[in-house]
Image (tube, rainbow, N blue to C red; front, side, top):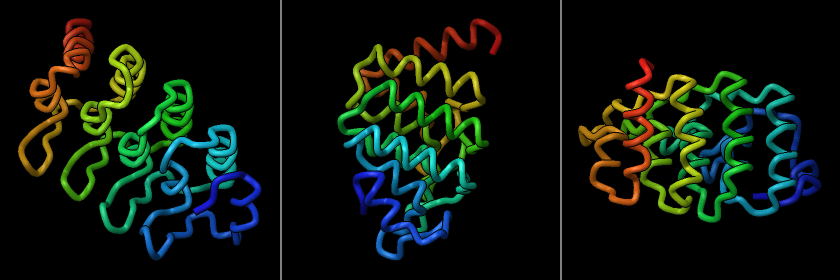
Length: 170
């Protein structure tokens, strides 16, 4: 779509919740795709959020919110960038337990995405759990993020965080 903040402002026509007909993404959701030019991406995201972009709109085809797409699109992730974006979205009221067309919640994609090293995901897991993410919500195949983590050896870290979280009465 656009890469730099300048390209975005040249493209932007004033409709903060515009939906791209081809991708079915809102501008905010489209800004979650890939993590190139992070400074520009963050500027675009802040502009959209500061100007009232609805964080709870879904993509038209996959019925995903910005968190779903952020975690699905993190092929070369930067955990500081991810954390900043997640905080911005949560502060503005995004539904962190929203379900996509497959019934999956955003944290499922954080668990199943193997691009982030184990220790870097932990801060994101904790933040999401602290803000109400439910790791037991099942998708249409009857599996929860906890179920996926049990099958993925590289995600035992998630199980440890959930166990610790529950042991502390959360």
